[in-house]
Amino acid sequence: MELSKTEQKLLRLLVENRGRTLSRTMLVDRIWTDGAAFAEENALSVTVKRLRGKLEDNPSAPKYLKTVYGLGYTWAVM
Image 1: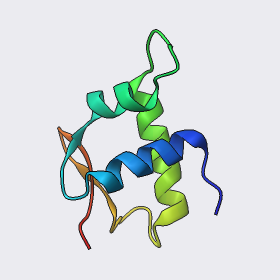
Image 2: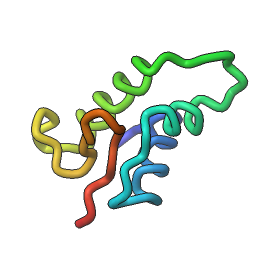
Image 3: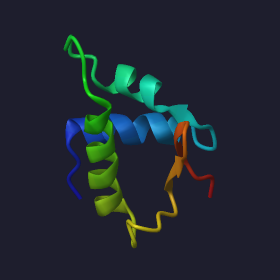
């Protein structure tokens, strides 16, 4: 399976912090570090959707990359 560099960064952050909720703001700041003045949070949503499409059996009912509504995302502890 091929992952983009952005998808790799997101996956690495989530797995390294499995079981902890990472805020959307923190993820945007840590993933888009290329000096861009600003990255829209929509970019994070798109990246999450693409990553789920590659990793999850049923992306609309994810087992691994979970949304914590109002807070951010977490990698489920298995």
